[in-house]
Image 1 (cartoon, rainbow, N blue to C red):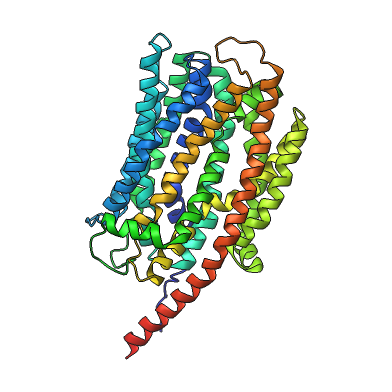
Image 2: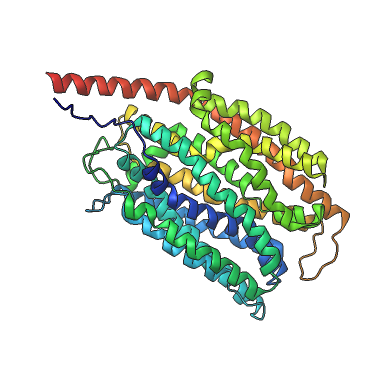
Length: 460
């Protein structure tokens, strides 16, 4: 007699995982280009003052303060045949198009037009399209994987490897292509357009192949979410602020946009920057055992704290290495060890925050719980570039095309910005994650009790 095969609810197929992470790969490519190469493109090709560029990017965050709030409410109140979060995946098209347009500036334009163009395209990319996609990320992820904690952890761990691999490919390839093609404004436009074409195609994979589970009701209450509930969230949930600080520091650190300057002026070869990504591939085995490490240490927060101490040591090594590549690469890899869990476990942070909302008697607010951290992420991205602009400008960096050398003060500041600033930020991240670990245990106990009560009701 044939046995009926029972589908394992905790099994995560490779094809499904690849499809779901496809959009994150495209977003990673966009972030890589926009946040790491926009400053040097604007200063060294368009001829816009470096401090002016970084100030424009920071000013765009004023728009984010509004759009982040609105996006969270829109997503929480979205109920369509496609689902709650899935429709907003189409924002990836707007992100890629605006990225190409941003790098299509003309050096012959007036300084005002160039600044207005940069501000508008950057704002559309991050304050509109990225904001809507990010607000929908948590509810879309939860519903795609049926709110299964085991699957969600697998997606975060193994999916992070896929995203990292995609990022490494582009991080390695882009500097090489940049050295060959980005020798003029037109060359920059061609280069970015060539990259954004496959990014658009790949980015649509999640929307096409990953459907939401309509049976999932991740919210404890179904009343419409209003600004009143958002205000209560900010007032009562302390962990939403703690996670916002973590994401602020993380995005400042990862978006300092100083790498291109470091390899151009300290190492003397910007193409070598791509090797950083290849060297970072040694972290992949560590990512595979993240779940085991978390179980051994006790929590995600404690694990990140331990990694942060290692990261501080790594960045100090990188600073004293100067142009000695083995030291730079080795120190950088150790520094990145502290940030990998932050990059790929964001959904788990937010899930715990949503659970804490329930513990306080509030709606889960899957979309709105990420408002503050989403704003902090984009503010951090702009602050990273702004901090680099301020530090290098104060140190006398010369922003112009064809400059043969920089003053010694600017070279030293590039080294400080590349290593010492990240070391400080990594330490802050570690301390905040240590504090956040208290919620992880409480949330797990609460969820277990809730499932036990639901099971008792069903069996009654």
